[in-house]
Length: 86
Ligand SMILES: [Zn+2]
Image 1 (tube, rainbow, N blue to C red):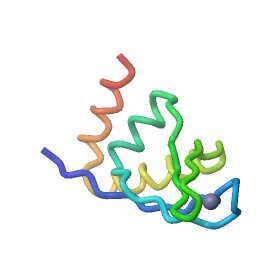
Image 2 (tube, helix red, strand yellow; image 1 turned 90 degrees about the vertical axis):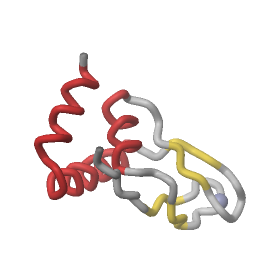
Image 3 (cartoon, rainbow, N blue to C red; image 1 turned 30 degrees about the vertical axis):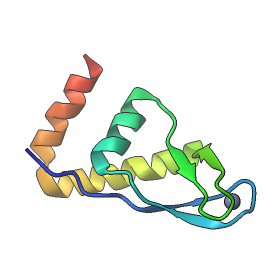
Protein backbone atom coordinates (compact mmCIF):
# COMPACT_ATOMS: atom_id res chain seq x y z
CA UNK A 1 0.00 0.00 0.00
CA UNK A 2 1.40 3.35 -1.05
CA UNK A 3 1.33 6.25 1.40
CA UNK A 4 0.08 9.27 -0.48
CA UNK A 5 2.17 12.43 -0.01
CA UNK A 6 0.50 15.60 1.22
CA UNK A 7 0.19 18.32 -1.41
CA UNK A 8 0.35 21.85 0.01
CA UNK A 9 -0.70 24.62 -2.35
CA UNK A 10 -1.53 28.32 -2.30
CA UNK A 11 -5.02 29.60 -3.01
CA UNK A 12 -6.20 33.20 -2.92
CA UNK A 13 -9.13 33.88 -0.61
CA UNK A 14 -11.93 35.58 -2.58
CA UNK A 15 -13.08 37.46 0.52
CA UNK A 16 -9.89 38.95 1.98
CA UNK A 17 -7.57 38.40 -1.01
CA UNK A 18 -4.95 36.69 1.16
CA UNK A 19 -2.87 33.89 -0.25
CA UNK A 20 -3.58 30.96 2.02
CA UNK A 21 -1.59 27.76 2.26
CA UNK A 22 -3.88 24.76 1.91
CA UNK A 23 -2.99 21.73 4.00
CA UNK A 24 -4.76 18.45 4.49
CA UNK A 25 -4.98 17.23 0.90
CA UNK A 26 -2.99 14.20 -0.12
CA UNK A 27 -2.12 13.43 -3.73
CA UNK A 28 -4.74 10.65 -3.64
CA UNK A 29 -7.41 13.03 -2.29
CA UNK A 30 -6.72 15.57 -5.02
CA UNK A 31 -6.61 12.95 -7.74
CA UNK A 32 -9.97 11.59 -6.61
CA UNK A 33 -11.54 15.05 -6.60
CA UNK A 34 -10.04 16.01 -9.94
CA UNK A 35 -11.08 12.84 -11.73
CA UNK A 36 -14.58 12.71 -10.27
CA UNK A 37 -15.21 16.40 -10.92
CA UNK A 38 -15.88 17.31 -7.30
CA UNK A 39 -14.85 20.78 -6.09
CA UNK A 40 -11.57 21.15 -4.25
CA UNK A 41 -12.46 23.18 -1.17
CA UNK A 42 -9.84 25.69 -0.08
CA UNK A 43 -10.09 27.35 3.31
CA UNK A 44 -8.91 30.73 4.59
CA UNK A 45 -7.22 30.74 7.99
CA UNK A 46 -7.88 34.47 8.41
CA UNK A 47 -11.61 34.77 7.79
CA UNK A 48 -12.65 31.06 7.81
CA UNK A 49 -14.24 31.27 4.40
CA UNK A 50 -14.09 28.13 2.30
CA UNK A 51 -14.50 28.13 -1.44
CA UNK A 52 -13.97 25.82 -4.41
CA UNK A 53 -10.71 26.57 -6.18
CA UNK A 54 -10.95 27.96 -9.70
CA UNK A 55 -10.45 25.90 -12.85
CA UNK A 56 -6.97 27.30 -13.44
CA UNK A 57 -5.92 26.03 -10.00
CA UNK A 58 -7.46 22.60 -10.66
CA UNK A 59 -5.39 22.28 -13.81
CA UNK A 60 -2.29 23.34 -11.91
CA UNK A 61 -2.99 20.83 -9.15
CA UNK A 62 -3.59 18.11 -11.72
CA UNK A 63 -0.10 18.72 -13.06
CA UNK A 64 1.38 18.67 -9.56
CA UNK A 65 -0.37 15.42 -8.68
CA UNK A 66 0.67 13.82 -11.97
CA UNK A 67 4.28 14.86 -11.39
CA UNK A 68 4.33 13.61 -7.80
CA UNK A 69 2.64 10.32 -8.62
CA UNK A 70 4.62 9.84 -11.81
CA UNK A 71 7.89 10.13 -9.94
CA UNK A 72 6.81 7.82 -7.17
CA UNK A 73 4.88 4.93 -8.66
CA UNK A 74 3.68 5.57 -12.17
CA UNK A 75 2.29 2.13 -12.99
CA UNK A 76 0.36 1.88 -9.72
CA UNK A 77 -1.29 5.28 -10.13
CA UNK A 78 -2.23 4.52 -13.71
CA UNK A 79 -4.22 1.48 -12.64
CA UNK A 80 -5.99 3.50 -9.93
CA UNK A 81 -7.08 6.09 -12.46
CA UNK A 82 -8.42 3.38 -14.72
CA UNK A 83 -10.48 1.96 -11.88
CA UNK A 84 -11.97 5.38 -11.14
CA UNK A 85 -13.37 5.56 -14.64
CA UNK A 86 -15.27 2.29 -14.41
ZN1 LIG B 1 -10.02 35.18 3.83
